[in-house]
Image 1 (cartoon, rainbow, N blue to C red):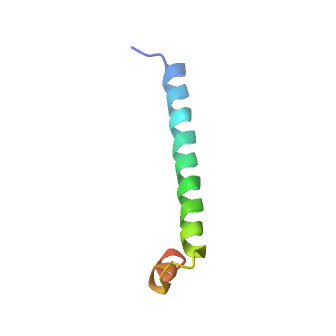
Image 2 (image 1 turned 45 degrees about the vertical axis):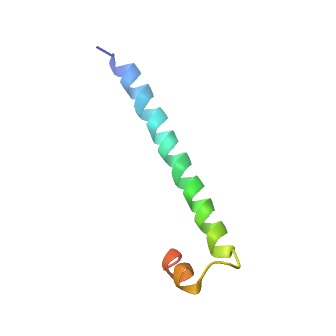
Length: 48
């Protein structure tokens, strides 16, 4: 069985990974929003 320190390390790694994924998704949505090809209806959904 894993000790508490190993479990804590795994939780920290997961938190960092989730944070990185959210930041990446945010950047992607910003790029979509700024794109000339982004329909106005999608733009409104992204930032409302």
